[in-house]
Image (cartoon, rainbow, N blue to C red; front, side, top):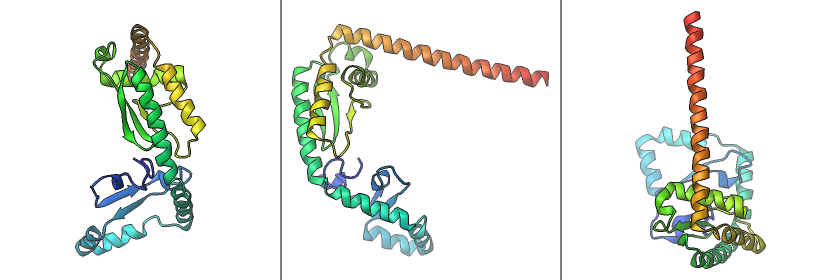
Length: 222
């Protein structure tokens, strides 16, 4: 889920599960520098050393550098300050989206924690039942972008951890405006975008086929 995405440092802290290995990467530097790390519990670590100590030692020293360490430390220090803010912002955003879901016939509810939320579509409603889950989520995501100026993917919302209250209001308002569309208008919207997708797919396949044909003709001439 990403560090602090659901509130705590790692999402499993909200559950009864405790994994043996946790991997961290882009969140350590906020995508500014290539960094990754693996957290391993003591039991797994010592058992691995007993099996192949040389390999464990090699991985411990692999790609170590001071610049990456300082960037990661700075990123974690700043992120720790936002833990309570993420929980507050997530609760605020979820409450506003739940209010939108109660008014929209397209939504069944809101799932998720913190700032990792998912719009649950009511797949029994027309035209969602006709398009199917994957296509419907893509269409609603496209609708929210074009009509509400809210970027999402497959109805997943992953706003920045430092999102402000004003931005939360704007995000929820954009989704609310986008979902005011009628069922028939959404049906036409879906047909239009499916037709565009099929056209682009066909054009790409034709270009690929023509390129292969030209390549074979050149090979025969040679």
